[in-house]
Length: 288
Image 1: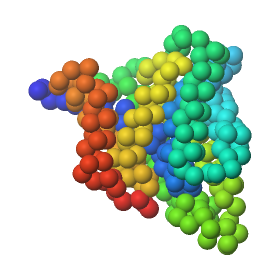
Image 2: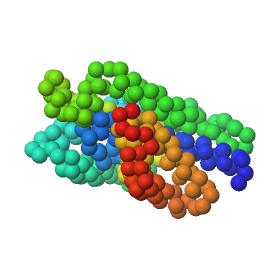
Image 3: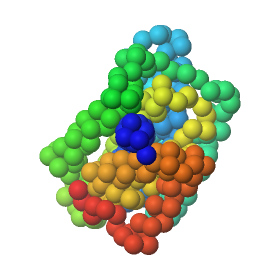
């Protein structure tokens, strides 16, 4: 394999991996507060992209479109938790997970009704003039994706480790009864976790929209790969989610370039199965 080709595969893999990492962080946030898996997370990615594209169509300003898309999807995440999950009388993890699966299907259907089946474009944040690394090329949007993923990771680690609210969210997951006894409102922590997770998903969708296209069914596979990344890295660890996303993205890119593009999606689920068989706790144990 030529060095230029390998470098190009790595650049593509790291960019996709950073997107998977952002989605994985959404899973980690909700797991920190509830110990459940939110399988509607991929649809937050889709809604973020399509809402930002709609904002940009009516008011062509990238900052306004980005903030508007994130704010609107954050509201959707809050309402989803408040209307679909909180009223459940027997809130065991299996029941809640099934509700999130149904929520994902619902959001996908609503998006198809609102935006149709067409694919929509979104402009790059800093233009499309590529950088050259030898014979490989790097788009400015790649740098935005990787850089913002690093910033979000550091911000989340600081939030969970250094702030009272972050520690309260983790306490609700580790021992809900003890958290209630010391005055922590579990309902508020869960709602906050869904808001943060939805915001992260929306941001990921907006970041990837200039590199691909916004379409109503884009969130399903992205959500599953984000889940694979979270499991690979360790579901309770923010650093693990990012590490899992990057490994998954690079593995997919190499499989596409060296074998066939037809194996791209299969790689994620093969890695997931291997991790579940060989190291079910993930590469990094939860708590980080």
